[in-house]
Image (tube, rainbow, N blue to C red; front, side):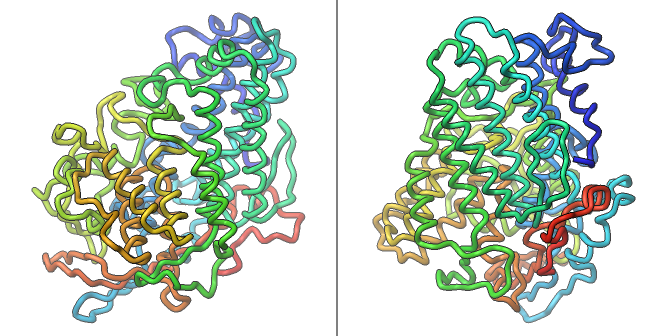
Length: 560
């Protein structure tokens, strides 16, 4: 990668011990100069490799470069996902957060059309420059930065692992470390391939190329590494050494609740969930105007097929189960890879809506069924935030909830209070399986899974299974539940895109039947929205200009 100085990786990963413990890099690694760490001098012991592998993920991947709005990958890149899915709004000028989620136009209940004078595609193109990145205005830069930083660190881990003198069962520990690197490479490529029109396959530490490939090819690379992780886990023979190695690479603060060290079988189920996600979020499955037969005439994605749905069904049937340990993050009061108050979309939404960075959207709130206890536990209407024709909202998210027993809590500003699902979760897996069932004609099976997720989060609403709902009605329940139960997990935009909602009405997209509150307080219940968002982002100028393409694949999305 020409975008990054490779020495940045060495320093940030090697000094992870300073962030996750009270001892210095030299104490942790026992060799080398902590003020000028190098791979040869510092990563030559078992402990050194574990710390390097940990830092490559949690610092290079999730903390690197994200200080412009909030302070992590989970507040800024994931924030764009929530903004573009109309789950939250924002009025901050940082990084185009107030513009990137603005639709092209809306049509109110009385037929009045409100038009955006600065459409999203134009904003992205106008600010995709190295100068704008330096000024904190290039929204599409950060996810690329994070994920290629993560990928390169994993390449370095893989280059080192076979030369490390492990104690105990060396093969089991080495394979655990390799599975770790393969898993996170799969994760990084999934993120790049799901968001950018083109990308680079970089599989050697310190090596670069300018052979850009399509987003589908990047997803293929992700699948390759997820499968390599599963195969490598199958070669682990010592559970004790596996646990010792994996627990050394996951920050101790994360190892509580469902973030405890996953067993091999649990990790393999997480891999299946991520493989299913790769299919689901990168294929069109339009559901516009409540029609399962909707189509989008111009897109950068191909349509889901019956074979795709069957693959999702098989993978999620063998995916994350309720109670499985998965990969989560927890904030700490200091020296964490994200802060309690600014590290996630949820924390930045928690509080009185007139003062929070993100404001919960009326389009988010309209997805709850009557009497849902998640609303009672997490939201109030004490204040109305007023800002233009799309971001006005009557709702505030209550930090830490109201304390209703057994009911899910969305956000907190307290250290360690909330599990942040970094990768897959039970809810996501169950809802992917539910959607596959509905699309394959097993509507009741899908509805039962929707009910199960609502029960798991303490929604307390009437069951939808056994009511004779049509497939379209079941799909409506599915879309509503994915939006509310997977909030702040980095998936919302992908859902809106594949369902066709973010496409222009002229090509078959759009969103219908929306609630919009005007600044005058008029509540509209049947608003039509044409978002017309770029489905896959251009390659950031920081890469495309410094590393010009030598392939035939475009680095700008030609559909826009």
